[in-house]
Image (cartoon, rainbow, N blue to C red):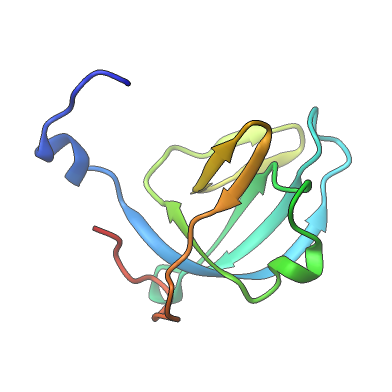
Length: 111
């Protein structure tokens, strides 16, 4: 387990629901990954790199809702700029995406 944080620390993390609207291969990545384009409603469109190729095809991901951290600083990954962090449960080397059980409006806050 990691170091304990306060509730105030947690409230600084901006967790939102978005819908994947585009998926591309990312052959330049060190580990197999996709480049995702995600719609967060009024918060706009963001891009992210995700190492989720073992369990998901591009077709599986298109139009899927996900949960992401929006207030991380952008991260350059090769020639690609990642603008958010898509969340998933890590099981060995597999990542299982976190998503709402029922479809919600893009940009909805996760608390």
